[in-house]
Image (cartoon, rainbow, N blue to C red; front, side):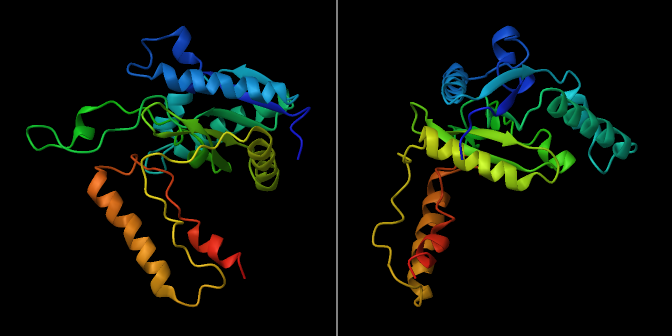
Length: 239
């Protein structure tokens, strides 16, 4: 699907905001924001329109929309209304922003035996509003950082607009081809059986291989390396 004529809205508070207000997000990674900027240029090169919008109460919404809090229903309704208004006013298809703004947490332990991750700032953007208001979202790879860690761009469409979001995501992936092979994880496809998956022991062995790698090299889930959770789908497609 072509992205020409589509409109995407950058959430200022979760992306370019860092350039204008560097003290707002301490510890953000400039390499990440630059990679995001290049991706935006790629979208524009495909004929898409990219606009920047602001949600000044974004973090307030995040703190007041949780279901365990009194008045969360009202806050959630207000949040949804603001998001829908932004999409409608700008005739936009989806919001976009980097999946995270700082380099993912390091694995391993410090000299005191504590997880390195406990002492680092990690700015994860992907959980700020899609889960709170029930909007469909998808994260698409846009390359690897110098450290070898993969970076993604998140798209969030309006309520019940799942089909359109998947179409946008497919068009994005096929047109820009930004996905880079992970550099820090083993190749789980090596030795993968073709044909139908009759022997589950083979699949289980490769699955255990990936879990063992994670257990030995990671201290938290954010140190992901493009895990091949779609491996089963890949094998079954060969039928």
